[in-house]
Length: 330
Image (cartoon, rainbow, N blue to C red; front, top):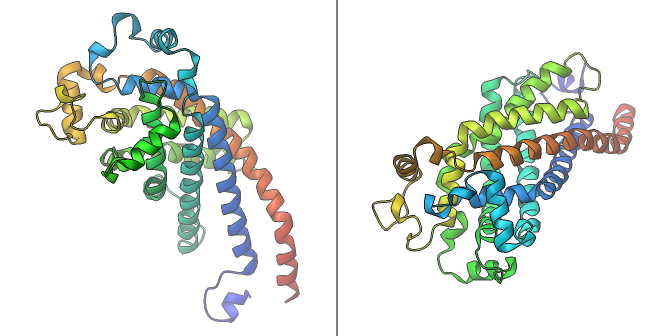
């Protein structure tokens, strides 16, 4: 009979508590490191997709720069290779923070669900709900960094260093600017939720007969690519709306053609105007670099996370063995 049964109440054992803590630590550390590395490696594509998404008017893109690679060549001719690395450090910080807080919240919610349901596996719908909840946890911290990074990437002046842009933002009285694009996250929270739900559900099916319950590096890479593709295509118009809102001027002269008022339009109004002006292609402007960067970023991050998490877990388990021994003696 377990200690919890003898005491007449359900109580988490010391060993289980330590196991949950070490699992949480390994998930957070692995996701943070994997997110920072993948963001850094693929940062030029991040710059490219952001600048393409931020175009408020077709006149900003000439006929020779309508594809991803032509647009990249034009940027290189105009601003040199430096344009593709400006803001790299803030992007890596944002990615590390976002992934760490997401998996921190997701792992806690998943452990709580399994505790309440006595270890029942998560279904697809439950995974989506927990993923959306975990996404909202990191936004208060990660969105201001995302806004700062977007302003760095879309700045047209080489003199505007990341520090100068940050000081300018801090000096402005309107602090709501730090959360520009927040409304777009009403549905954008589905992107990581969809991505990690597809990943976790397929992973669970693949590893259910394995003893170590992990994917190989190749499996994690390929599954990460598929999961990110599905999630990106579904929510991409809202990704573009977020960037348009974050790069709009006050008053919104840059996007005046997208709105019938001088105030910033809502996400739905903005997307409606984009569709009326540019059609379906306008809603998916910048999808090429977003898919290219996103697919490889997710694949790299999830591959590294799988490997790092198992190694960190082993290191933490070695320390927790002492707790297990002391618990057994008691």
